[in-house]
Length: 141
Image (cartoon, rainbow, N blue to C red; front, side, top):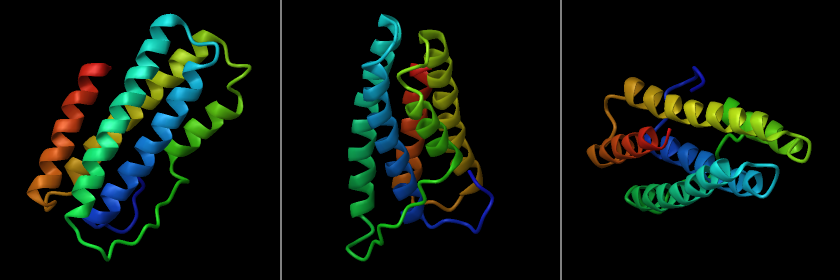
C-alpha cells in the first residue's frame, strides 16, 4: 500500500472493491488467452472469489451510509501490473502468464496484510471481513 495519508475505512473498502473488480475482469480475460488448463481453473476461481469479495465489501460499504464518495485511485502498483499484463495478453506465453498471475495474487495478499498491520482501529466488522478474505486468499495460493 502506498505510504500516504491514512485512509478512512470507506476509502479502504473502495480501494479493495476497485482491486477486486480489476482482478475479476483481468482473470476472465487472461483465462481466455494462452493459459494452460490448470491456470484457466485458477483464473476462473480467482474471478469467482473476487465477485464474492466485492459483494461482501459492498455490503460492508453500505454500513457507512449514503454519503460515501466514489473516488478510487486506480493507479496503484497492483492496478498497473494488471494493466501491463493485459496490454500484452495476446503475446504472453503460458509460463509468463502463470508467473504474472502468481505475482499478482501475492501482491493482493500483501495489500491485505499491510492494511491489517497498519490500521488497528478499523470497525470490527470490516476487520473481521478482511481477516476472513485473507484466509480464503491464502488457501488459493
